[in-house]
Length: 188
Image 1 (cartoon, rainbow, N blue to C red):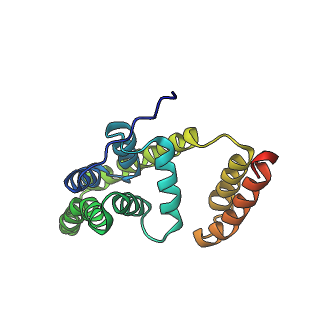
Image 2: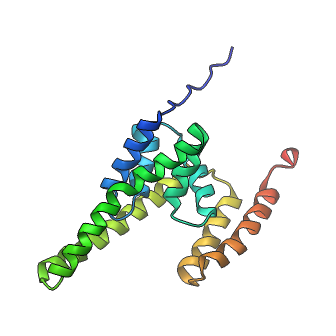
């Protein structure tokens, strides 16, 4: 008899809230790397591929990608309450910190040390985004269609600097067509 894959743990509403709140609290420079680490590596709620699928779906909808990931995942597990607690948890601490930082900014921004601290954070945030990108690439199924779609998206976004709506308008149908063409004939 074939072995069944272990079922990933199903977090409670409290666990969803708490973990997404911690992602929001510690996710300086972008929460995507933190959310991926929490959901895939630490809690093992989803596989690498499962996270990629959530992220791909979340990127299709307007709004912050990680909020969309949380909404989709939370709703899948607990319906509307699950979606609500992930978003509330995700934004609780960043909202409080941003309001307090706004007050501090108006008071101390003229100090050179404050400007240096904010300047030092930029390469770290960029590294976090690049690290997450490389992990997503590692988990992406290795097909010619996927590589072509990735390269096409990169060129349209990074080199031609097209707006996101236009990149999606071009890349989604192209990726679907490439995926169909790249499939083995018996799978069609």
